[in-house]
Length: 77
Image 1 (cartoon, one colour):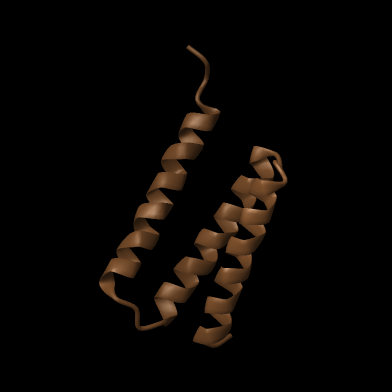
Image 2: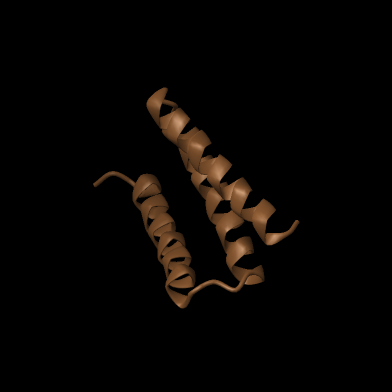
């Protein structure tokens, strides 16, 4: 897959996420799409010449997703 196809796949996934959000999809479905988006973005960043701030943004998103997942599965206090 070339860089343009990867970029297109990322944009399509963003549109799917937006549509799911608009349709009030269950959180698990949205989270699965966000995970897939992050995987697509990491793949794109690793194979493309992108500004370092783009790489940083993908890394920050990965960390935020991991932190959010810990919050979602944390036992109640």
